[in-house]
Image (cartoon, rainbow, N blue to C red; front, top):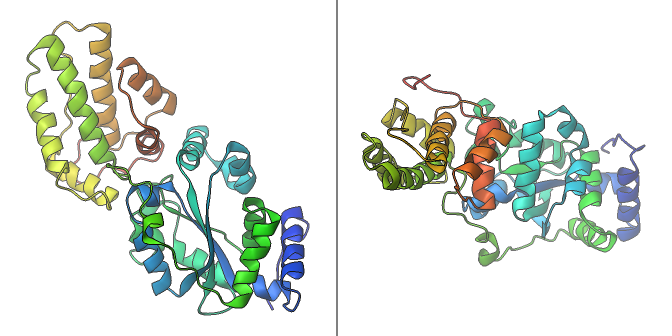
Length: 336
């Protein structure tokens, strides 16, 4: 029998009580040890990877007994990740909230072909929150995690955490239904159209998004000052190159971008610029920082985009801001 700690946590106690009432013939602690909680967060859907993610989970012996979409608000995020959020830098904490509020996440209560200890086995397979520290067989590496914010997959760390987090996320009736599904051995078949929702053109790729925004900003500058001394050609080549790259491997595309364009774009503030023109030149330079691995304060990034009148959609903001607080370190041949 699995030992469950944290019995002083009211959500753990309440969750176990629901299990006992919903499945009276089962030992609650033994039953919960056979299931694991996972969340496919909005980045999985933005990159069109939800179907692939479920296939990879099945390959590792995890199948959904219960599934539903959940929408996070500020209070639930704080309650779910109370310990880890307290340790985060303030900018990263802001962007985590923005990510989870951007779209629904898919909640999965997974049964494990291997039996008990499901949560702990899934947590080990998941990998580190920093994709740079993950081997190729970790789930986050296989899914195509972009950075420490858009890492695509959350799982509970312990069996007690599965009980606690599921209790936070589901109402009592749904919670009872979920645990009855585990007890019955039910496997949910998710409809294909459900898995295709939320796809975004740039996926989680900062290379795709930054190239598109730079092209728009450069067009605005060119309309103001005429010649841009090669800037227009450079951003045009960037966009043409990145348009042929897959959005499902954002880290790989960014590394390849740096090999293709080993030097920064540099100063593009030629001629006399209006206030808006100067802001657009500044925005292009800040996007340089994101492309070449320089951290950027979130409020600075927000202000630069506002001053440049550069409108971005909510998910595009998450891609930009997550790259600002969790940049991919420069590789060989990349400008400092």
